[in-house]
Image (cartoon, rainbow, N blue to C red; front, side, top):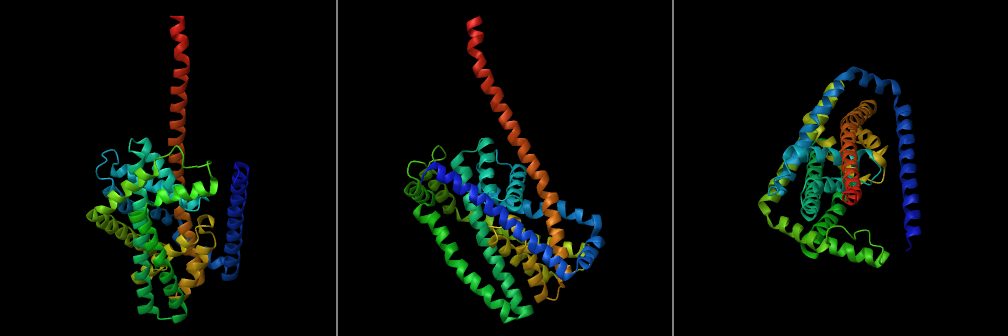
Length: 352
């Protein structure tokens, strides 16, 4: 596979992502027109500027997630909790708002940790293990949502597809964990890339895959840290359910706590499953309308909730993206200044 073909494939992949986003936007517009724009806007007008409360509130689930991540990096003094909360906000904002297939945030996180002075293998291993535990916690939370659906709703037409989805996802999750713990995920990835691309290896120059796999194995051996991290991630998901309840309260349509749990648990699944769609456009809205109708929430209210969630994503995510770009710009300027000093130093010596 030549470099030209690689560039061409990346170009068409970007076109495909933006085309998918356009389809999602069209689907959202159709949903709003079908369910009545007046009813949706009426709910949003009730909340008004009160929706701004969702922005600081979202720091709570982010902070709980970062607390679990902090446990994995407990031996790195420079990885302070406020710094990890900042990176966690950047990771979520990149994955949620940019067309990066939900992996760009993790790469940015590794880069920011490395610049902080944390070794690249430890930074990469901590994010890899944290993401894996996040998948485990989301799977457990989805099972709770399924249990709530069985207990309170009991519609087999909805429960059976959800149950099949969990059964399909479980083997993939187990294999993903085994790849890291037993077989060396990044060494296998290096061999796969070499077989496909030959000498054009994009991993070349980064952390040694064998060293990265060793750090991942070390983290998996500390069962207490894994358990504590998983606990904080589950706490973050429950706080996310509280955010759902608060959103409906601000919209003037308070719901029961079990409804908030159900919407958050299955909403997480929808967002993860729609990674090919930028910000899950269309899929999230359609999913909330579908789930809302199953538990007695009107389509216009479900759409208003989805738009309020979009508002929070933008109001929360854009400042984090700007701070990330500011940090990147400062880093580039500092490197340029240092390189200019190195270039200018010989002439000074010659003049002396």
